[in-house]
Length: 431
Ligand SMILES: *Cc1c(COP(=O)(O)O)cnc(C)c1O
Image 1 (tube, rainbow, N blue to C red):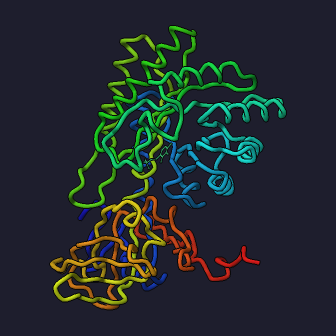
Image 2 (image 1 turned 120 degrees about the vertical axis):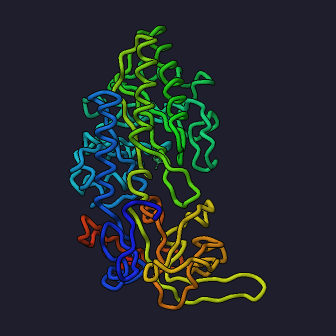
Image 3 (image 1 turned 90 degrees about the vertical axis):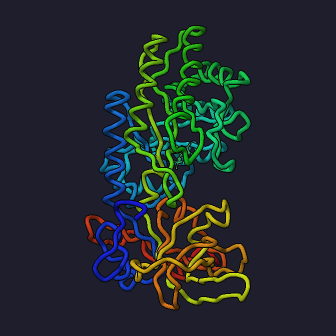
């Protein structure tokens, strides 16, 4: 199996975290998201332990909650001593509603409005990861009004191409995010932030991309960021407390994807950081990282029921399901590859190539093409693996389809964490 939390039981049914997925499909209905809570907790513990061991005692993982945002996951993050980052007032609202301490929340985004900033500061948010000078002005002005000092990190683009898919590649010089070191704009925004009252500049942030499968891009980013920080120390006497290296550790979606050991990657990045700090005499900053995908993706499985199977003679076969791009738009958006299997016939040979098609009136509504399955039949339960990240978070009501529930599984016990959206929920804002 693709990941160790997946198995097949004596009935030939797919299990996730020891729970029979076919029984769960019957109990909760399809389409349905499952989330292996035990798995997410293990990942949080790995990040927490390894970052403290290999970076320093002050190091901290933040859960990049845009990957999967609902109350239950923030409660879990809090229990696992994670800080979180949010990218919108909506995510902040859910985090606060779930009881996340505001001082443990970091607010990202390249276009924060005055209302966003006021809302976050009124809630007592810990940090802004400030993107630009307009945002700094807005934070400074409102902090002055409130007679307080607001902590900020500055978002810097170190100029790294981690050789990943362009649409999720954010650390290059040409980016809508942050200020580039190479153009001098990073130094400029540092000087600007330092000149503003009511702002406490705690350090710097970078996020170089996503689906990164080795330590090299993180070491390169650390090199560029620390070189920049050393130059500020030498020129201005400023020593940063914190360096946030962003998220982006990759996840295996198919057998063709590489495997990455999170602990080992953090160990190698840590060794590299200590080496640069020793060489430059820079005190080891508090290191933050922001894993999103690698915390939740392989904890997720989506279950669908097969509604129709057709073969176009001389062309190909389609299996149509009761969900699609509204619950998982990633194939339609990025041609992201997934692994499919029949949850109720998980031991049978997968020798039938077909395109898995969603139910939307849109030819591009596909979950994958040329997916290998046992020949599906109407009523089979089709499982798409590794859907914990950027599925529920990216779900829409296109075609007025309602959003799916999330069932969390801890040590084989299932609990409904998000109920299925109703038509009344969907029309609640319509006057
Ligand atoms: C998306 C994002 C992350 C998380 O990236 P993953 O690839 O899901 O780990 C972290 N930080 C920032 C600023 C992001 O935009």
